[in-house]
Length: 473
Image (cartoon, rainbow, N blue to C red; front, side, top):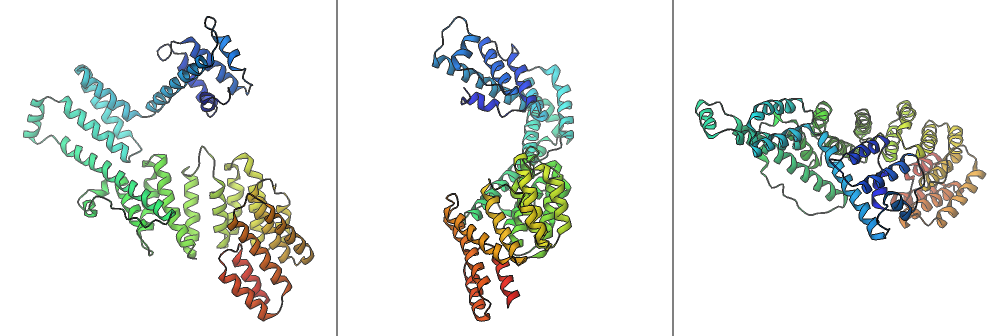
């Protein structure tokens, strides 16, 4: 029973959502089948109370007294409940979309010719648009439908009089709203394609399909979403440092609330990707810019998924901050935001990243102490904690412990099947070069080791290894 699609779907809901669905399924308007209601109650009760479900036949017999159980009948019942749940999702989504509700109501008034309601709801719909915060592509699409419905509600005589008096601007509004929707969606698609091209290093050419000078003739300053997406598109085509990044950042910081959550994340991703590109080119200004963008993304709840921060974003912040010596800022970030991580990841993330901070501060004994609290069940933390521990032992000049730890690490990497060949090679090269550095204090030999490390692309912690050779030289 736990493997059925409806059970797996309902298991993803919060208690509040389960309660709302329970009310929905018990409404005779949405469901008149008592068996469907009985199955819903069983599943919801099991999920809310973490109670083990009975087998299918037992469940069937408890909600159906007339018909005998067959697997086909039970699967049909589960499917019927799933269909009711899908309707529930539609209605829940509609409840949160006041503009769409207004447009659907006006369309119904027009279709059913209920003219007595028209004027009232035309005014009400206009108010809904004025109140709407999100003003990206869907906003302009719905506004287009609104203006179109208003036009259709007018009589031909009213249209003629308004046109003669020069009072009717609805046609102009129709065109502008449709253009805004079209331009935003075109730019979003173009940016998405550019992202995938860079990710997979594709050389396929993409035509935007609209002349770029169309933006010069468009009142772009009045449409924040068009303006921001145009700047994002420009930024993707910038191979050199330009002011487009700072222009986009300033506009995004000012107008981010006018975008729905998924589009806020798109804007954030473009900003942080641009920063990372220049971080990888060792531009120190963009190390600090990346921290600023991450701080903004967290404070505005842009990069949190149901209140959870991804481990990758957490690690990126720490690594980039440490590179530019922002030790206090990074430590404060770790302690202030650790609760944003998934509960199962918090303890490891806290200890490992505080170990990193201690290492950069040259507090190597503290680094070792933090690493001793890391749980090695997670392969990522296992490997990277051992790498950091080896480096700390080197800095502490505990050569005997270092050598035994390094040898154990080599054995572990060779046996660990979950690592792909490239990672395994890079880890083994790190340990191999470190062994050579420890056993060679001759300048000529060290220079040869240095040259090999520089030429080898598959070496983890390359910068640190080269620093240790420079220290010895």
